[in-house]
Length: 200
Image 1 (cartoon, rainbow, N blue to C red):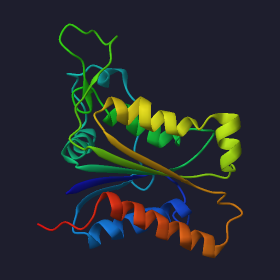
Image 2 (image 1 turned 180 degrees about the vertical axis):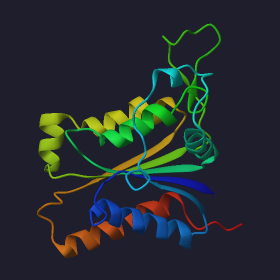
Image 3 (image 1 turned 180 degrees about the horizontal axis):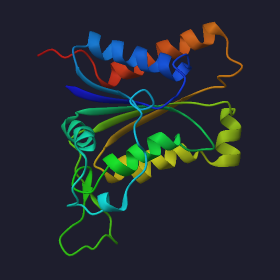
Image 4 (image 1 turned 45 degrees about the vertical axis):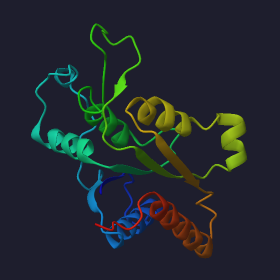
């Protein structure tokens, strides 16, 4: 299988990077092909130019590469912190520029964009790993867990993803080393459950 792994955190010493390293190792051990992107390291430009908005618009070659990899992926793993109930801006820009019409979704003939899109992604499963400094009860009761709605309903659900799993790790800022080791084991188990060893 080919799995896209997208990381969005500026600090290489962050727990997000530790999750990404763990994720990549499990996928490698399980003999999967990996498209790995550290958006900050790659200095991904998150600004969507007006000329890229139409489905048939010419797009830069580096965006085409992201799109082609996403379209070829059998699974998708996204790793990012919870910042103000949202992904970091660099990842939101990746969504805007890469999860494009004609690549990730399309509309039925005669639909001008007002209807429900048809999912086009080959992948049928996606995992999102988040980190947070907000206790889970407060996240649910006060904020309504906006990241769950965003990824499950507003993005992957509209792009044809039928299996979705999201795990929030926290509170990171007060966590111990042993807690973080346990979280990494949990992340490894989740990746292994979705993308077990390739027997081919």
